[in-house]
Image (cartoon, rainbow, N blue to C red; front, side, top):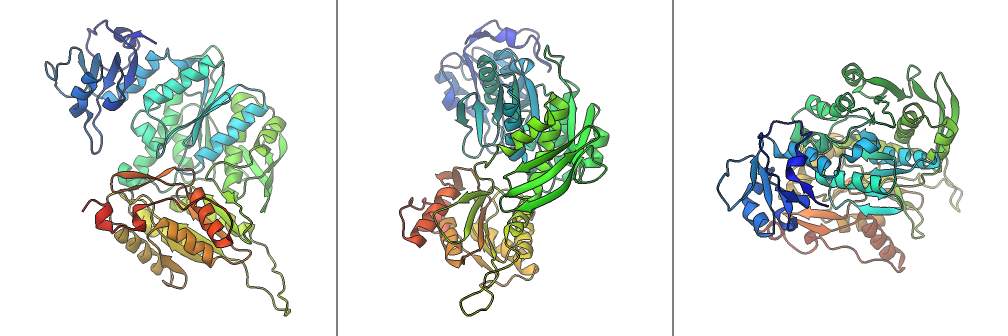
Length: 540
């Protein structure tokens, strides 16, 4: 594909020079190492890296034009340099123009929130498929374009703006008509999805997360709210655009979002006052059942997903599909029932062990809380008798998790407190310590555990190496117990120092189980905490 740089600025909504060179570009890159001959290189300042410093590398690799915010005119042998106030925000519109504004030819449904985004996106995608709608999806796990499933990376949330637009363009080319797009607060704060022209916005919840980046709950909430603000700006589409906001009636963010949103809005929840509500909810290890009720319908819903939080996720997807896209309620219910599992979301690992092993992505205090509550609901209400006629020990919940380095430190204490209150046994371990001291992170978590009555060596332990922590938890587990490894879910790497090491909690769980059971299984993935001191893996 070749486009005139001048043409990319025809509908560009931000301040820019009046004269744009009429040169042709063949692609857009934000990493100098990924630049190909003919590319436009967009240089952005990041938290630790200023990519203006890599402009010479981009030129050497074949970039024919550069956009940045520093005054670099006449330097670095740049033949075409365009200075803009905010290259990061510019990128999303330039990428959209390069791909002929693909979102204008799709019905775009955005899903945001602290927890439950990926599950809700998948639920809605399954509803659309059940309704015979040609839909795609972009989530933190993957991008789905027809029969093609693309991995979106190791630690990505919403992909970068030029990748999002490229995915949307591929969906248009594949003949799709709808896309479900999971969006994070980072994506909104960094303008990655500003040119996606959303037709429907869904929020799952807004709880404690990313305070290190946003500074306050109010700022974090405002970043999420940009999804609903964007609905007002979506241009008319030939296929129509409902501009519907779908809001959680039960969440603490409801009053703010309900007052903030200027487009049509509907809410869902367990409260009787919700526009779409769940009635008669029942839970079991096999899933959830409830009646989705509104002034227009009463529909029985059954889902193999577990936990009260998935009732909320189902309602969010159901409301958007029925009221936003006109899907028949019975068809929507069929779509909800068809989703059996999501990678790394309450995913069961089964090798024949006499207890339940689960891997979940829960990495926030609220997500850990609802995961542990879901596990508690899966435990039986009565216990078998032993051969001597006495009741067996009640099954327990064992939680293994950590808290990331260079991220919100307050979460460390809160998550440990949550686990002491809701789990029976807690194993604190590594989760992307990055350049922070893992020992200090675990010490902060242990302080939170003790504050809630945890007793180290009896109800909670610190095991720095995550592989060893999972092995230790497997050895603790008795028949009937539920073991949850939380925090990594679907992710495929873990960061120590500045290096990403291949890591998958599901592989690690299978390795620990196979060792304990004496059956064939994968090897435990390597982490530097296995055989190096902290100073060594930090580079000291």
